[in-house]
Every structure is written in C-alpha cells, then in structure tokens.
Image (cartoon, rainbow over all chains, first blue to last red; front, side, top):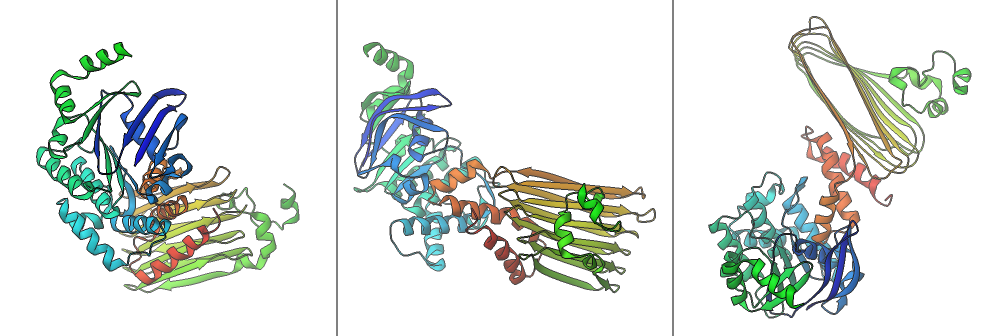
Length: 253
Length: 255
C-alpha cells in the first residue's frame, strides 16, 4: 500500500532522511520507533508534503501512484491521513465547517457525491462518541482552547470522519494521560484495523503499542530504518533503550 | 506634486492627515461636488439604528456620513468595501451621553486600488462607548487603510473607546495602513487601539491541505475567519451573510 524506496530528504539543506526504505502492505499496522532527531517527524511531513521538506532522491508509491506527483490536498483525497504531533489551531473556523468541507473536497477528488449537512452531523456525532469527545467541542473553533489531550482526540475524530485508507500518525500518544491513551488507541483500532487499510504509527513509547498491537516494528535512526521485527522488538527497546540496538546496527552497516 | 497645482485649494491632498493615503487622482475623476455630499443622520435619545452596506464599483466612490447620537442611543454601521476603483467611506460621529457607536468594516480586493475607512469619533459627553473593528485583505498592489480619529472632550468622563485593525496581505506588493489618532482631554477614560498586518498562516494552510482542502478552499476559509471579526457584533444573520458573501465573492477567481 505504501512503498518507500531509498528516500533522501532535506530541510534547509540539511539531510535528515538518508536512504529510508519501508513497505507497509494493506492490513498492516507498522510502528516506527527511534530516538529523538532520527527523522521520524520528517518522514511524516515528507509523506504529507509539507513545504520546505525537500525530497532529493528516492520514491514513494502510494496505492499504485507516485505520491510526489500529488499536491498535499490531493494526497489526502487519495486516502492518506496525517495525524499531527502538534495539531494546528485555526481561529474563526469551526471543526464542523472545516471537516465537512474537507470531507466533501476529498469526496469530490474521488468523484463521489458530497455528504449533506444532516448526514455529516450524524457521522461526526458517531465518531466523536467513539473517541469520547463532547460533540459541543466540534462546534468550537478548530483546536482553539483545546488541551493537549483534547487535540489528539480531536485528531482521531477527524480521522474517523475522513475515513482514510492509510494513516500516518505522528506521536499521537504524546500528551495523553493513561485513560486518554486507551481511548485513542482503541479509536485507532476501530477506525483503521481493516484488511484494506494501513497504518504507520510513529511513537516513542511502548504503551500505545499495548493497545494498538502492531504487526511490525521498525527502528529509525539517523535517517534510515536500522531494524525491522515483530512486536517483541518494541518490548526489547523499552527494556534496553535505543542506544544498544542502534549502535550494534550501525556498527554492522 | 503636480496635481496640487491643478486642484483648487479646497480640495484635499495627501498632505492632509485624513487624506494621506487617499487616491487623489481618483478623487479628481469623481468631481469636486462629491466632497460636499454628506449624509446627515441624527439618532434620537434612546433610539437604536443599524445600517449595513456593500460599497464599491468600477468607478471611484466617496461615502461621507455624519452621525449625531442622542443620549443613550446606539448606532451600528457595517460595511464591506470592495470597489474596483478608489473607494472611501468616511464617518463622523458625535456621541451624546451614554451613547454607543459600533463600526465594523472590511476592505478587500486586488488591482492597484485603494480602499479606505476614515472615522472621526467625537466623545462629546460622559459615559459614551465606541467600538471599531476593521479588517483588510488585499493582493496585487492594492492598499487598504483605516484612519481612525478619536476625540474625547474634557467633560466626557467614563468614555470607553476601542479601535482594532488587522491587515492580511495575500501577496507581496499589497499594503495596509493603520493610523489611529487619539485626542483625549478627559482624565477618566479608556481608549484602546491595536493594529497588526500579516500574511496567511502557513501552518494552518498545510494542516488544511493535509485534511483535503485545496489551497483555494483553505484560503477562503482563513479569509472568512479573518474578516468575520469585523461583523461579530452584527446580530442580523442575513445581513452578516450578505456582507461576508460580498467580500468572499471578491476573493473568488482573483487568486
């Protein structure tokens, strides 16, 4: 579903991704772990098409198309969802208006009919309930005045409403207390666990992986994937830390 | 300046404070009689009056309004200024005891056009309040101005006057000017004014794109939110919709 080959990317002339390759087939939840500064968020933003992130080499195939041929909003239309580590506040724009326009813009891109106001509200209520987010919050301005945890839950409500084929979730667990972590984790399972969907789950910690059980875990260090394994790899990292494993791998390379 | 020689002395020039950013040549096309055309409105004690207008066309326009507010009265004026030629709305308000003046204005557009609001708010008596909010959205080499003068007379204690201006420039080359002018002779008053000029929030645009909104849609939503501030105090939803739509229509197809 997502095939990243030998990806090199820079920000302000500084190389961050240095030959990253990764395949995530449909039906798979693939966790990416790694130390600070390894390039995890850069990977997310390169996939999202953030301005200023320059791809120097390599390719990304998304559902059979070249991802880099698509503008950021077209990537969303093609089924890619990027969960932000720091969701952005948009004063003066309500969640309901924002998400309805976003959903209908995606539907239009895919040649589907727009959703009516009534049907949209029904969908929004259902997804808000799933993430235990008060529907009243969706009537408020996008992320304005939301706590860190509320922003992350709102991200998952957005994901539920937009129903993407593939989600790249950038540290969706940061800023969440234990209860909220469980709610968000279960939300990810309920929205994205399907044979025709895929998830790239970027995280620092094992605790989200206790809820969203990944099929595979990869370690990202110095702009490359240095090891890929099953869920047991995350447990080993939790015990031993990144240093031991990364040093061992880089020494081999 | 050559036009100063052509114009009779009673005509304004850019040297006059209230005409500093005005398009004097466009004014000349409009003709000198337009300057005498003041719309005079007196609002009786305790009365409330609201007026909403969309101004601007493909010729210069000058709208001059003189308001006199009786004791405890309230005047609300909301304007979308979207001309394709020089368009100036000028308001002179004199507030009686305990009166309130509410002004919300939007200038929007491109081309090499100047669109402006010029207000002179005279707090002549105690306990009156005024609130003015102007938002300017421009592109190409267009200019949006808000020149707001507030005068508080010696007896006008407990005056509460506020002015807020924000400019949003969508392209390099566009400009916005804010000139707050305060003249206060009373000692127990509140006068607040603020002015900022900026660009569209890049982080918000990327976030919106990541959710599937095209650059045009994202811009429209952000501009809508930005100019919405000017009409927050307008309670008539239909009128608010009319003023907003007129402004957003200007945006369509121009970017």
